Image 1: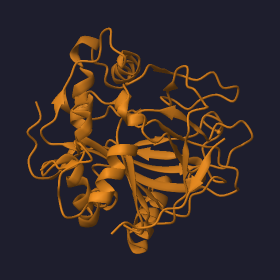
Image 2: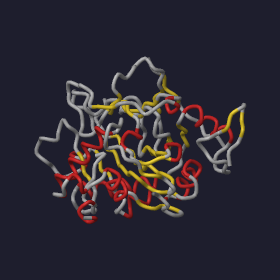
Image 3: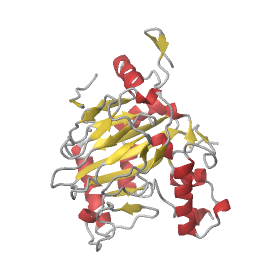
Length: 330
């Protein structure tokens, strides 16, 4: 059963633009505790306060160009089928999903679950990245979800955009405050090629109901968005240079815009969680039950197992990998 489950993969605009500059135990500041980060030397007090208030933090030039070049080369080899990675999921945009497959990166818009590829998984283990991650998760660090996104030029149907969503919607593990995403630009990202868009402070809210948006051009598989989303909520476009990395909270509302350029926009990311996480049941009468049902239906289709033989949490356990410390999850 374990081997068969390991084949299950899935996760399958009035606004302002901000350019970021580098900002060189619990701690009481301004009458309140900083609950979302640990008091470690890597984060300054100003950075901890910013994350606590806004739910995200951008670190400039965190990942070296030589590493980004290695990941790009590996991605190209995977797309050309020169390299085969176990349990890797290769995805195409809905606009080209039914067209004739042509090997190469132009046919692939995302690869995810690269935890079994040592070249790409190297990103998740970069010391400078993990140093920051530990400030959010603590010393036991698990890589839970890995992606390299190759956002394509939009064909005119706006299918290259990603609806506003909260990542916790996909995750059956807690606590939320000990989960963080590391998202690194592999080249300059801006409003023209569909940079990330975040709603500062939205991480202080609750996990909201999601579903497929009713977009004329179609929506990519499992790209659920928040229902009844209010577009008037203040938002920030994160324009970043190659190597810049944003760390953000799993309840932060975010998405990405249409790629209006002729090139592909690449980024690499990993969601981390504390090794002391607890898996929860989200499969019945829960705000996450819709995505759980969709993923489990896919699992049944791919493995041939009966529905009652698979739990949503099991799928996430199989796609996770220890980065540092111990896996003490329950």
